[in-house]
Image (cartoon, rainbow, N blue to C red):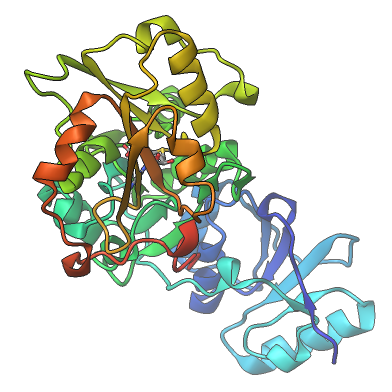
Length: 391
Ligand SMILES: C[S@@+](CC[C@H](N)C(=O)[O-])C[C@H]1O[C@@H](n2cnc3c(N)ncnc32)[C@H](O)[C@@H]1O
């Protein structure tokens, strides 16, 4: 039989779940927080925990069998296989797309792993539901705070970004349900609204959700935006800070961000300029005696250097590009504002990359101490998350 693999966005899934026991519940839990429309069709009163899940997710229960309707998928998960067979026959007669995990060879639809293959998590517990926004640091698991490690072990659900290293994810409880919602500049795998919505739904269903972000969640991490939604919706939350990339990279390159002889202040700046336009305060940024740290600036490196020079910075001002800082893939490229773009033109620079501008960069030559070969984190291969785990 041909099996159709479904690539729906979760919010477009309309599922009719046939069953009422543990098997149906395990399946239903895979869809919590994804915006799926689910209707349960039990033949007898469902288990109390399944009823509670339906309530928490605003899913419906209809105590009559489903009738075929365009766009619906029947998911068949009774406790007894013979009951599944009855409904598989019915689906076949009616030509309804059907997914029955107990009978893969009779399923006409395969829902992708993200929605069905996650580990069953323990049932939600009233009063436990909350979101902890956790900073995972710049990559090296040794730079994770103790509080973050405790949260990871306690989490029922982990919603993480691309910049969380696999070594850090490995510290989480094996029971935790994991969702990768990575963001790359041009490819937002899950829309921000869907992420916000998922966090609230999981927490309301009685789960401890850890929203895990690279570095610190309040530094170019959209942590504030996500918490604003939770605050508006009355979902309890906490925040655990992380070591931001600037601090991790500074330490592991021997480039102090301030130094009495070179820089009296430091600025964290987004290099993700709108349409490459120069909407930053370049005259101020061009002043000497400060250190500039550009996040997300690899794509706009030339614009950054050109703008600084044209607003008065010396073309000889030192600049460093640091790839995958604190990990085994850390690489440091040191140059000048006038020369760096040409210098790296023939190289393949792997994100995440941080840019540091200022006289402090010259200290790298003397203070570099970090040996990437001994780093516990392997980093990210070509900037892609090594295990885009969605389960
Ligand atoms: C969306 S921002 C997130 C920053 C994060 N919240 C933090 O506090 O580090 C992503 C940018 O952080 C920088 N970054 C994060 N981790 C890095 C690392 N290990 N090495 C170099 N740059 C890194 C890069 O500039 C990357 O484009």
